[in-house]
Length: 461
Ligand code: GDG
Image (tube, rainbow, N blue to C red):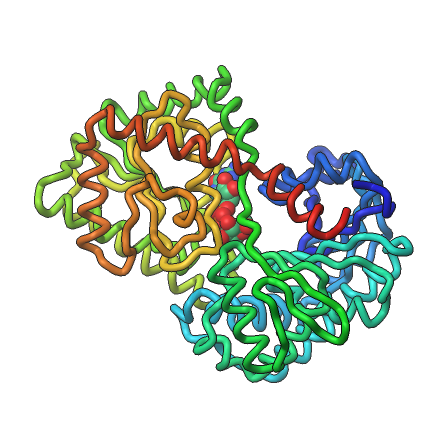
């Protein structure tokens, strides 16, 4: 895997964040939690590797530094650039458009200009760091122009790109004033990875339509080069979650939470607080079940962990108010003293606590209106070592293509979601076990190590 020398990863954020020291000591770096870092770390630590990205602090132009076997190369971005490149173009143009335009996408030429300039800076940094003939793997929707820019600077490199979010159908993508630029940007890569086959097919069709590119299915021909565009469904570290679910630390957490919840059945939701995740839909579905008496506050509790996200973007502030108002209304109407039907946490929890919640959840409700993959669904499955528990999963997640033994629902249909939660709560143990066993095998076999390996192999590592 290392014949070409170093591997270079390029993503919006570095895999580390700065932790403020207590008692006047020196600040230190900590590896950020997240699937991508843990997926790539074993590979990156065995060969020389550099990660290019933003530190999370405006105008941070500190020198490259080493942490946990990986060289981190910061890209400085100013506050104003973050507003145009990240909050604006990435999160108010691309994010809603690529998620089926469930919020209107905004098109502003000033954001596009800043997005282009910041992408150029990432490409420049990668061009400076990459070894001759080396491998570069660029990640996600914030950096779609980097492959083409980098190829122009360094034609000797092998360049991969992976998109973590969906890639939209023609009718939506065609709205983009910069549609050809973005397609050309991606085509600078040798391998373009998508979460699903549908996403990669959308991309190929758009290349035919707007750039007259010839293709043979997953292989496109551009300026004498061939580009592979296909699905590489991302996954989780199954072994890690499976093992964590058996630790004493998690068991202790689970006992503490169970003591607080009493012997009520538990339905769980875990998401970044994002309008794509369908938190409102599952709350409405649960409200219906409370209304009909199929769930009662003394026999069922819904625990929703909503991790704060993109708080500077207006739509996210509005979403938070709406969700919190809705939960307040439902709890006010159906709650009893000492029995709150929805337990809502607006914060992240530790991974021990997260796994404890997965272990306690009789039903895991994953109901995004659209999601590239959804790792939470896979983590839940990996933690259910005794084959209990039922996964209710939106058809519109990438995960639904693999996890076909979940109860698949249309998240736009509240009756369907409520019906599935009801079925899940009443499911006979042997049917739940059959489904969960097969879901676990799917995730066990297609874990994140396999994902990373298959992408690298395609890239020619
Ligand atoms: C994007 C795409 C795609 C969540 N809350 C806590 C916590 N988490 C962890 C989960 C999981 C991750 O965050 C969330 O991943 P998802 O896949 O569910 O969603 P996005 O953040 O939207 O990710 C998505 C993914 O990229 C990968 O390609 O699947 O479609 O949108 O790992 O465990 N972790 C801890 N505490 C929390 O409170 N420790």
